[in-house]
Length: 413
Image (cartoon, rainbow, N blue to C red):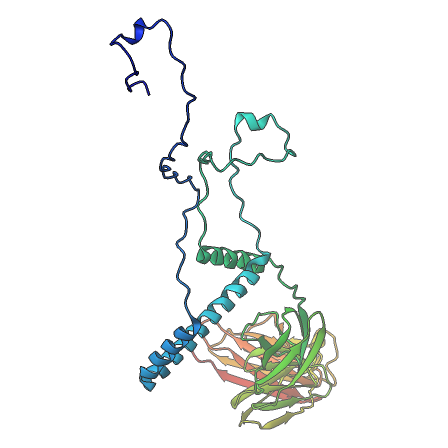
């Protein structure tokens, strides 16, 4: 409008006009809309997912059937077997995993190291609800954080905990028993499970035996050994008697009168008549000795399991209290010192060499050989000894009014 020339203008400028002509009412055309700027995408936290094209089930099924039809039957069978095997492996792994968790459920939890609280959190009470940290702010790194445990480490820890639980279980208390061991005849040495002790001689009570069966073996000189088993219950007492059979010779020794000491092969047995005892096969000598009686002896050759009986009548010794020696120039049956010798007997003792010491019934004479002694009737034991010569042992029977002579030539040792 301003650019159009004014009608009838005389070439004056716009500033020279004193009065502007009336203006026409302006007509405004609607503005042409400018093309909108592309909107900026709003920032999204999660990325936008592209929409997938929809798949038609019928097409997928037809395609799968077509592919299955082209697969060889043998490959299909192998695939099915592989799938079944994989399923079985997974099922077994899940089963053992669940079982290991059940076994370790009783194990004590492993203590974790507490995180050191900050200065601001220490001022708040313990029971106060913890403040949740916003997602925008990253959580401060925790010092000395414990690394996460794998499944295998958890299973191992659970198994170790279960082992500790089983190990800490108290062991059952075992109450020992005892057994009374006896034998026929008694006095046998016995063993228990191959163990023995010098004091284990029947009858004997063995204590501290564990519950169960035990092997008992017994043996005695002259008898066969025997092995038996005994069942001992906890805290109870049982008994066992072993019967031993004689395998060696058996000697049965008696005497009249009884009470004589028994000596076997020169060794005292500490037994007195009547008695019986077992001996090994072979030759054995038995000597019976009783105060006031003569010694009786016998030698026997015995075989295995043979019985031998010996029952002598002991001969009483004469009274040596009244014996008297007679001088060389006195008569043997005459008077000596005014005492009567009627009813007595005499023993004349001579040795070569002379000078031997003489003892009658273990009473030593006051004279050396040769010597004559007057004694009452009876049996007498005469012992003659001389240094450097072998001793002489004689048994002499003196009758009333009789006379016995001993003439010995001594042998050098």
